Image (cartoon, rainbow, N blue to C red; front, side):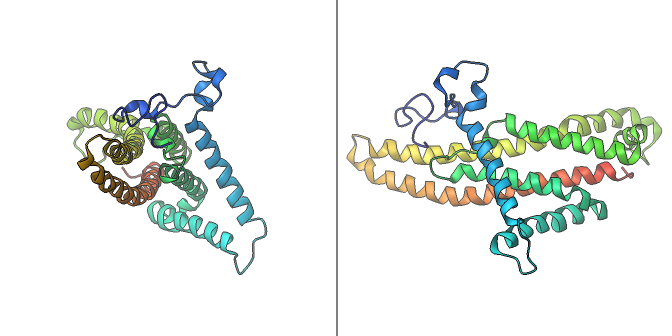
Length: 267
């Protein structure tokens, strides 16, 4: 729960990184190699996968010309990603990447939504391992698409060789371009999502647990301030709803941008 850290009462100690350290849901696995696979974070991720699979299977089980509400919602999500991200950014070739981009968008969005859902109240993306895994998978797709379209040698050349630049400056530009393509792009993709979800969870913890600490204070004058703190928690929750949706969109948009640069022969 939001008012309780994995190990200690949050009203007694300020929230810190230990608030993200969830132990195994199976007591016998605590301290075991398999502990991370059965934590609350892992459970929320598996619930995300199950909810999305069931939703899209049910929505497209019996497609109709006049869509049902579920079919309309599923088609709207996919259509938005396909038309407004895949095709707009990548071009006609973006249609073949639309299923991956749509899957990426809804997976990140649903995972982020757990951060404001009662009893869950934390996004799996607030653990750096999940954004890293998503960025790594995107990077593999990015490299594969470029090599398949251009061939290995030509793809490498187009990725790190700055066309139009003088030959004498290429030894300076090539390492910079390599660093950007090989390290900076996947790293910033993961860090951006992680930092926003981590910070959002910490902010909600501070206002919620701060209100609890003020309300439990022996100083009577501080008790009314607790309601102000809880009010700010509600405001920040609404703001977090906007941020989590935005981060899902930004991650998907940047993925499409990278894919576009990968299949494009021009640097």
